[in-house]
Image (cartoon, rainbow, N blue to C red; front, side, top):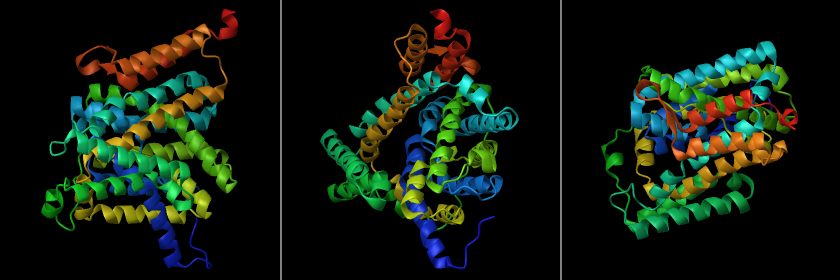
Length: 409
């Protein structure tokens, strides 16, 4: 178990932990702001989820868990169709998928997962997650979702926020490179203040301290079936996250504490988050970047960040402040963010080195993309499959039933 060493004072530990939360903060609150969930609840569940993860992994991996981007589109669609409470039930089921995968990995190793979910399936599914959100990003960027902002103001705010975000991501150095989203939000919000388009009513009406607006889950088959397949992509991505942080700290976390433990920690953190009405948790690559930069390898820093997130969740004025961020500011950043998710999927295919023009791969990738982005749906009522869920299922089935390319030759 990790503790603060004699060389490290508690003030330094507190400052380093706060810095880790600062790095994760922009992306952490972005997910609830885009999906209509409460950002204060997201802060609370990120803190609790991180503590759960470190409890499962015995404080051996320096990671912070917070809102997963992979679930943005499914959460938006699920809330629109089934409501927040049923969506939380679906997310608990998705977390349960994580835990089941973790136990199979414990018993069988990771080879079966690579066979079930090869790059030709995972890559396009991740692309669907990003590209399915493109219309939402553009709609917010041009002001369609904001009543008090006209088109000209919206374009100015969204493009200014986007410009600063991409400049920090590409040209930023040190800590600045780790907080491009926060930099874009602060810039856009400052410009919106100058233009007089920020509504301060939520801040004025909020108390200084209060319990976050937790939402209890309810369970409906339609919402559960809608959400379960979405857990596939983040579960596969989690392996990459563990390899990445392991390369930084020069530890093999797939062996100790073991991939089954880290997957279990992720799954339980997601389930706990949904119990309170928060978005699913996942390991944050931004924080991995911060660990690389600061060489802060002690997991105690992440535990401090988690406790700080829980404390901040009860400061209502902070949650209200986040709700006053104009839609176009978020929309501008989303255009880059969702595009980058799609690029991660493309990179998964590229690194696999397989020819996408071979008939088998062409069929699998094409149908995943068109079914996922085009709005195809099967079934109706309580048993509707569509979007990312349908795309993932189609990819898995096609990969399982179509013979390997060498057998087709």
